[in-house]
Length: 98
Image 1: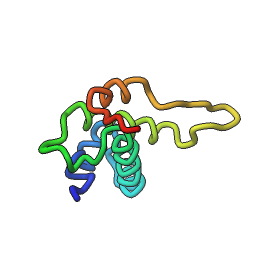
Image 2: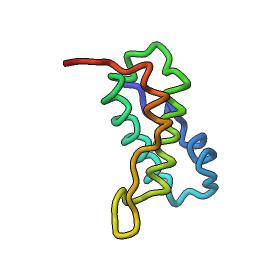
Image 3: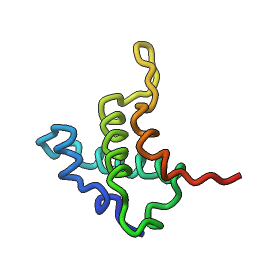
């Protein structure tokens, strides 16, 4: 299985988030793994791609940015859903199974 950080490197993700310290490295890596699982639920295993399309890696970045900025999906003052762009980016690769 391809490591998630081979798809989106931790350093690239931190640059995308504008994070220049290492305190959150473990949390960001966990968020990358969670984003991968979410995307794989739509498109199937990323290992099935010869090379992961840039649309999918961008969707992973957007999803991790969302996870990072909105630590709680719902709460007293927060109600948040996955950004629209994520599903727009992965939609063309979706595997439909019934």
